Image (tube, rainbow, N blue to C red; front, top):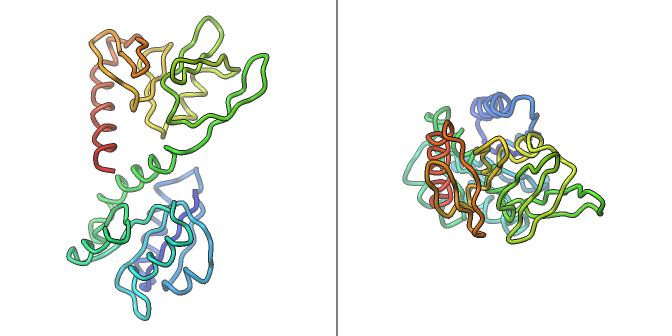
Length: 233
């Protein structure tokens, strides 16, 4: 994960940098700091996430965002501000979120989590197939994963691939992609849930998967949170 922080106030720049280092912890996100929109643009570097202050001299954050997005349109931009009325303008420039600086500790974690999901939704996963060559698939196209005897089967639409992975490894790999372990034998894509009852879940490809009774409440909570994220970005 590569993240840029752009703020002309050194105190805020360091506060945000420390917050990000603590939030990502051992994942060791690469964090670059810039004291102006100009120095940020001059670096001409692609980042996964940019946290941009709005009120800066010479070139404000809106102008910096507009110029940057023409070069790197896939980057997720989070606006930092102390004035709510300025934040509204951010939607014109495709800002993903706006964060009130004084409320950063409570607002930024949700924004970063959602930004991570947005970035991961288009990512590619390499499946190591048994007795076949590796293939690359889009994570969001995986409907569910199941264990059958000692094999792991990855279901994509109405097809499936038998892979040389463990379901626990897959669960860890997809932990930030909207997947949830509903049963010891099933890991599902919450995006692909069609309907459910206390014992089964119907996926959008028509397949039924088992739901552990003890995980029912937690599953419902995770599904509701994920659907809220999809609806609100």
